[in-house]
Image (cartoon, rainbow, N blue to C red; front, side, top):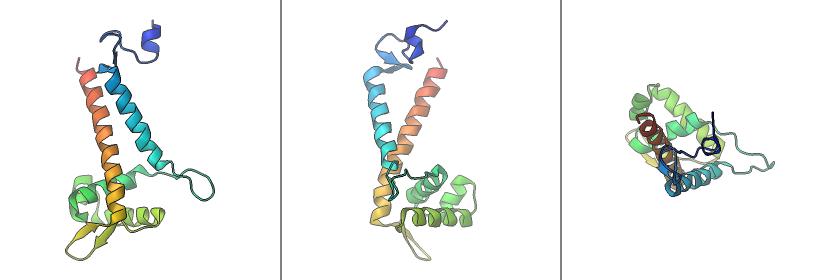
Length: 140
């Protein structure tokens, strides 16, 4: 039922130069970028073990960073503002650095927050790209 072409994702329906309906070179580029982003998170700690990643914390960080508002992020994520604050606090403790300057009227990214946001934003964009590719493939 499955030939060698379909076994590894090659898509005979679209021709030999595509993978899941995406030109092979573009698909390879997306995969390489995803691996680079994933490797950002594979930072060895002092014991030589890999970081324990909680993607929900990064998701909260992404929405707060994007809107520069804890309340807007809580509305977008359908969670309480307290849950947003706790998630950011936990992430800051885990990363051992402050990600935001906060006062009663404003939220601003620290330099470390800006660096992290640039990587998280790329990761979210690649996830969205992957979802679009799958949606396009499923609509054919």
